[in-house]
Every structure is written in C-alpha cells, then in structure tokens.
Length: 577
Image (tube, rainbow, N blue to C red; front, side):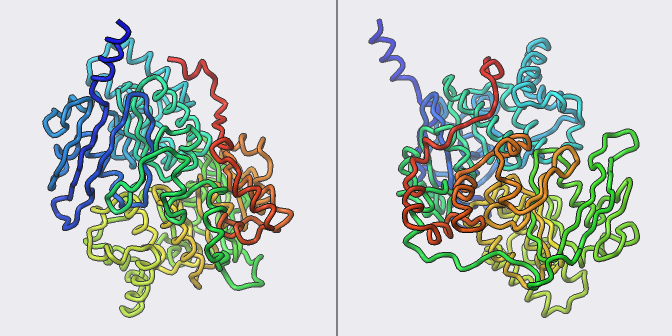
C-alpha cells in the first residue's frame, strides 16, 4: 500500500511545467521569451529574478493564462498547470488554480472599500457569507491591517494598496501563487511578514513563484530554487547558494558579502554622491514651518506640526512605514497639497502664493505610480513635454531629452508608446520626464520600486552627477539605497519626523529600526561594523576596495544564507490556518 501511494504521488502532474516556451507580442519584432524550460513541484518556492524587461512578467502571464487568452502574439512551446495546457484551459479554471498578484496593485483593485475588495474573489466563487467573513478576519489579522477594513481603497497609500491586493489573492487559497514584485511598495517589516506567509504556504504544499528584484529579502525565506533570466532566456535554475557563480553582481542585488567577494577584482567605483556646489551646505531651499495637514475637516491628521528644512547639498533618504505621511510631506513642497496649518516656503516663497506650474521650475516630483504621469504618444515626446512647457528653446529641449534618455537607459525606447513598456520601464520614463525639466530640488517617491539593481544604481549615479540639482530627496523602503547614497536620513512615523541625521547616526539602533518597521540588511550590518575603520557608509563595491585585507576576508566569506534570518515578530498562532 505504501509503495502504491508513492507511485501515485510520482504520477501526479506537476503544478507547473514549461516546455521550450517562446513568445513575442503582436506589435514587437523580437521574442520576449526564448526557449524557456521551467518546472515547479508541490510545496516548492521559486524565486524568479533578472533585470527589468528580461521577460519575467511575460513569463507570469504565460503561466496564469493571460497569454494567450488576453495578450495576443506568437507563442511556441507549451505551459502545463496541473497537467493541463493553459492555451486549452478556460481562464476561469486557471484563475481558481493560480492566484496572481500584479506588479501594479491599482490595476487589480476593483472594490470601493477594503473589505469588499478582499471579498470579491470569494463572492464570485459562491462562498457562503460566514466563510467569507471568517477568511477576511484571518487575513486582515495576519497582514496586520484590521484598521484598513472599512477604508476606501482610493484613499490608501501605494503600500497599503499593495497589501490589500495581496490579501485579496491570499484569501482565496489558490494551489499556485504567482507574485509579481510583491514587495515593491511594502515597508521592510511588512515585506518580511508577507514573505513569512509565502514560505508558510509553500511549506503547506502550495507552489509559490516570486518574481522579485529584492533578492536578499527573498533569500531570507530560503527559496528552494532560483530561476534567473537574461534577455528572455533562463540562464540559471538551481539552488540559491550557486547564484553568485552564474550572474553578474552588477545586474542583480546580491547580499553584501557576495558583492564584496565578486567585486574585489574589478575597479573601485570612482563616483561619490554629491549635489550642489561645495561649501553651501546650510542654505535653506525648502522650509516647513509648523506644518500640519489633514485631507478633510473631520479626518485624522496626516502631518503633525512639522518643522523641517531641505538644504542645498542634501541627499535625503526619507524612510518610514506605509502610511507614515512621507508622500504627503513631499507633495507640500510642490504645492500639490497646501498646509492645513503652518506654511511651506520654496526658495523663500510661500506655496500658497504660487501655482504648481510656477513651483515646478524649482521643485520636480516623480510619482510613485508612473501611470499618473504618462500620456504622450512616444517616450521622447513624454520627456520633452516638461521642458517645452517651461519655455526652453528647442535645441535645449532636445539636449535635455537626450541626456535624460541616456541616463535612464531609455534611448532604445524613444519612439515607443510609454504605456506599452513594462512597469519598471514606465517608472524610468516618469523620472526622465522630471530630470529633463531641470528642477533644482528633485523629489522621488520610491524611485527604485520595480527596478533592477543595475538600472537603479546607474540611475542614481547619473542623477547625482547632474550639475543642476541643488538637493535630492527620495522616499524609499530600500535601506540599502539610504546607505549607499544619502548624506542625511529622515524617518517618519504617524505623521511625525522621528529622526533626522547622518546615516550612521539614524540607522545604528536595531530597536529603533524595528519600531520604525525597518529591517537591517547585510550591507547596513557590514557598514555599521566597519564604520570606525572607513569613516562613512559605502556601497559594497566600494567597501571591497577600502577595507583592510583582514576585514574584507572576514566579511567576504561570511556564510550568507545562515546570516539571513527572518525575524518578523509574527507568532505561530497568527499564521496557523
């Protein structure tokens, strides 16, 4: 009997089997996917990684049936989900087997209220009301979001929308999960909680496929295998510990000890971030004076008595949990929002006395969601729109457009429609549009979300080399971005600035980091350990060359996977089904 059970198990179809898959979209000349071979077993958690535009999202669409049922193009090969070829399987049947979290949560949310949104899938499957409410209670508790239950979805922050979309998928308990950049807009602690849930689902027998640029975060939950893609091909499929041997550390963000070891043989990066002329550090550019703000007269205070200044030469990383008020704070600098109390001065001018267009020549803002910004026929026209409307002569507009396209690695897409690009590429178009305007203070809302390591490091290096920015502020959940680039770190929570200072001053205390829902990374831990030797925080590629030999060897050969412990603070009862 035991042998019969083993034989039956061995004969069960795999949850996923991809055989020699090729695909190209109807209006594209080149193949987006090229000869993909991939399989996944029950209870397996697979990380899919690779640079933006390498085909990761197209692979996800091929598995969940959007290709070929919704997206048209030329398809070769086969994709089997639980033994059934997706091209011959009704979409409704695939949807019950495969749950997909999209990279852009706003494209997935249809309910006006959070509770309705989470219930949507279960209602369409005909679940009894009692079961729906029980499942909603459970998922809200686990994702630490019961306070969002009766909120309107349009009023949520980007990270909160991501959590709601995720809850709407997990509550349906599909047999396979495809998660396309699920951590992109989540604060680090929330991301760890979500990852703990994904690992739990895999351990219970579900197949989980995570498409993610935040490789170190996913390594914390010990994925069974990693599938790495380049130019539409799978170039590595194996255990995580073998990944450094197969990939270019400049293209995917690996843990700091791996980068130390791999980059030692290369030249040290020569660039050190700096904006504005030297010697002018304390000149105020944007000043918040006793600023409080709420969206309506009866609503809660989103900002509470903020006194804060952006100075010439600042490179500020603005950190904090989802819903802390970070985006609201930045929108005040551009006049998109005006204080309920207090005032904001931009180069000495009260924002209440200036239009958004007038302020745009001084302050540029890049939204968290690029779709809010994109409307032109081509990428080049999109990037040219701002400087043209600011009155720059045609030759200057062309120069700025070309410079921005090159800096953001978008030259090849200059004549493509912006909305036809991947989410990560759209984000780069939005950034290029503001860069081309030449605003003196640049505000970036999650500039690296959905971006691969090579693109965002190239972008940040190029951005901070440009001569016309006097200060740069970036909202981010990426602690390593703050470590590598910021000369000043500001942390917000509950509408209040909790800390403001140099990176080594603000990020030194693990207890405070947990309070702010931040998570120490291998790069932060490395920099804190060697700070007294090197005198400032650096990216790993720089530390590989400035560390003394004995310290380099100690850290470069640290057993990385043993160091990546997932500590979410979530109890067993909270994840128990």
